[in-house]
Image (cartoon, rainbow, N blue to C red):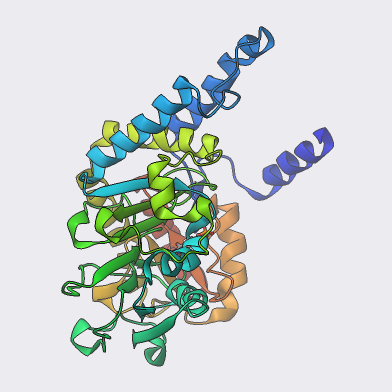
Length: 382
Ligand SMILES: *Cc1c(COP(=O)(O)O)cnc(C)c1O
């Protein structure tokens, strides 16, 4: 263990220039420094108490008053920050957004047995593939023919009037597209995988029946999946739905039908406190706009050295997907960027190229540093 750690530190010393590093990973994403410090302090401070028998928050029963007040406080903070009314239940589940690809149809298809999906990239494709195992899935529109370079316009969506719901992916993390508007699907329930863009701008929750998001992009660490469900769509679950993933049962149990992901909920609570301190969702929106404007400008300024395949109006503020026009330069780019302290800029494994993920915790200075580096690399190899 010790040798391994020394090796890691050693290799880092060799490859990264001293100074600030920025982590552009697509997920799990970077965390705010002040939140990491709080985590460190909390557990360092309680080490001695642990010896004397007083458990840390992670060692307390989840039914204890201490943990219950933590989960209740987390829910309250989230409701206040996002504006989630009592018409909705807030569930803290496990399994990631990927589990929701199956759990949304299991909980929502009901007697209709059919649903509409909009295919805009890798993650919506995964959602469709999984949902097809549970019902009749209509791909009402797909951007596949244009290589997912834009979000299909809603006037071309062929919606099924008998669909139980319409599913969208608000931000395509691997392809770099984002909905900058909310589709109007009439009285049909709208379901959104908001994993990557959640908490990066204010949202009008009332437009949605279900919102779900894995925590490790903007709400902390892996292990927690947030699911917000409008009460009127509870009660449609297939009888074979596992209890731990049954929206209505978990709502009745306040997400404590079994042991909830306690550490991830603890971190989510710290993230929500951090968001309050930083100025809330309006401030996050402003920063997301600023960061992404800086990086897209550097790409667009490069005279075609870098290419971003996504049409301007649908470009993601969160995941910027691009590549050098000469894709042979990509490995060299990644190696030199790492030496420059710019980490994890490789595109999604299935897509390739480059990707800069700019989640809430990324300082605007990180976007500036990346933009400068993009210019420098282009001058060197252009
Ligand atoms: C990251 C991501 C997922 C997958 O999340 P897991 O927690 O790994 O299941 C699904 N959808 C979107 C849009 C994502 O960004």
